[in-house]
Length: 356
Image (cartoon, rainbow, N blue to C red; front, side, top):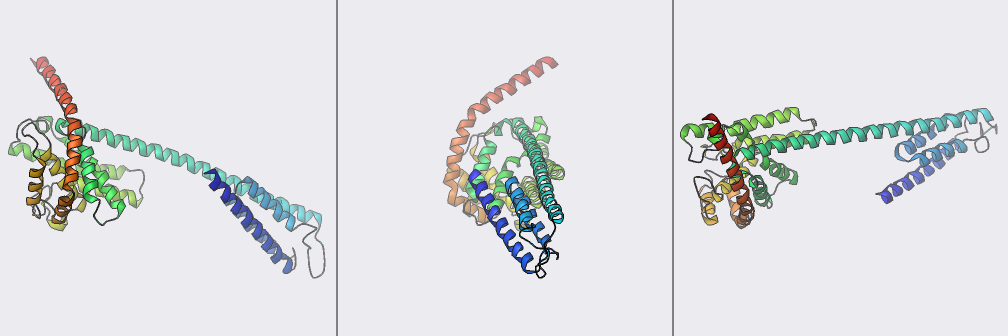
């Protein structure tokens, strides 16, 4: 970093020196300091102050003063009239003052900018921590998906997207959004979310609301983001689409809007395959995990109806990597889930005893 800065200052020094010599020749051959051309030196002084360090700024200012000095630059070349000491001293003071003022202003602006950047970074980190806390809360409410579920979803998305021809930034937006896909579950009642048995039709309708709740949460985040740059707003919009529409189906039988085919955002289509595979391959209170082969068959069967046909083709190319991810992360998560379930059972027991 220091070497890079040193090279930059050397370049500034040499370029300032070159400009000074060029401007000196221009002033000399246009008749001397009688004419307005000495003002050209303001350009090189400003350049040195804006791009250089204090040494370059002072050196350039002093050199400019010397080049239009009593000894080197007459008042009028044609008539060989020398300029007085006072005009030269006054001009030199102006040159040096301008260099110092510009340099001080630039340094103050840079310090202020660094301070604002630091504060902005702190606010971004706070926002990120807040979002992460919300995500952890949504996972903690659902013990069957606590711990590695979001990690698996992120890993699945990376694998599924790796060979798809699309901008890398768009892929990153989708991968980031995987952590938010079920954030709406924070708004689902515990008696529905934590029910160990299969949901009734009424309970299922309540559960389906998690996509709408999640979309509303992301919309609130979008409205409150500090940075209003288009890139960030687009990223949040991708996450919102992913959260809101990841249970839609190409055949129009999904929810919450019943979208069909290309009406469904691409990010939501990716999430759908990853989420269903994870649900099929994971253990639930009401079911055992399905073998990988069976999971692949179900997703293949849903090609064009439940899942985007092109993404299913991509999935079939990389399904073995899905299997590796599931085996590694689900195995590590079983112990965590058991401990959490025990804790929840203890809490429920305490609640029951306090009521009776």
